[in-house]
Image (tube, rainbow, N blue to C red):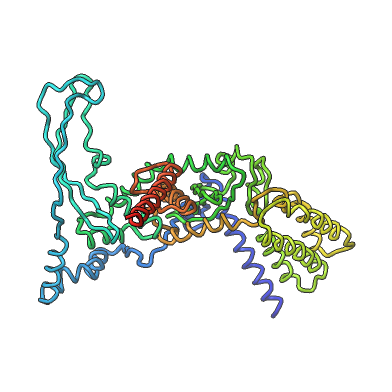
Length: 500
């Protein structure tokens, strides 16, 4: 009886293996036609093309005529606005009030009459014909110390077309790209999307409900697109300043798009942060971004960073966690425990010195003797277990990259700076993951780079957006001068009051 069960089990395994082999052969050779024994050809789908978008409410599809229209008729908004409202007076009244509220508009608060141009701005040819008069309303926000209010400013200006150089006179500078929305409302939208991680739909609803605008999500999306294009050079300048420095932290993380998984790379210092989008986790982006960097690179143990020709410091916090897992995986291995204990004593002494004196090499160099003693100690262990031998080989291989910070000023022993920057992206990722495209992700990353750099520099992101400045260093200098002038004015006023 047992023999028959075993033979039947093996026959089923052979049949399954034959089916798998046939499917693999058909997938590898597109011209291979299925044999007559197969009832139908296999449907081959590449894994990269599978749609990974997960929706809480999947769309109903059916091959039966009428099922989709019946399902559409059962939707909540359709029934409430079309069916229930016919027999319920309260719903009809609520619908009427909601419509009146949606049509609420803002009164024009100001009228600006612009002086017409008397000559072509390009060829300086004097105007000889009548200008075409244009009236446009600019929707914007007015900020004060206590908050913000919506406002509409009517502009009356004249447009001149030059028949020689065929150039048009520009619109007033307040109309960026000839849009009818001002800089403050665009800055507020970008601030909410990037720093507060609010969805574009919620931002649109906030602007319409609180400030009385009547815009749709496409307007807010264009704010993001134009803002990313406007600050693209800013991110490039931030990276250029980082490459000139002596320290960069690097890390990467995943992001899920509609049909694939991509990666976001972050490069950070104590004052700047930049984010980049990449289709793969290959090191080509690191090479192109940090190829000219000559300082110390702090990173994890991913091999892509090793290709950079600069001093490197590996994150000892990652190493400590791996060593802790090794002890948990080998609880009775005394050799592994001895290596981990010796490393803990070495790192504990270094951290105590850092807590007292900071990241100064003149106080940290003394621990180079302790590092040499540690490696000498682990090399003296005789016959050790496979796990201990593996860890000894790894520590010897990375010896030149584990304690670089002992010989350089201001270089930390961990990669928490980059991981903190990753957290900022992770908060934004919750709102956009699976809902955006590679182009959209790149736009988010440009604006997030500017936002985090402003935070690291002690600047307000919203104020920077409202200023229209593209250079963060110039904006910081202007803010500092303004504070100094404010303090001097207050001190002068105080002295005048005392003298009086």
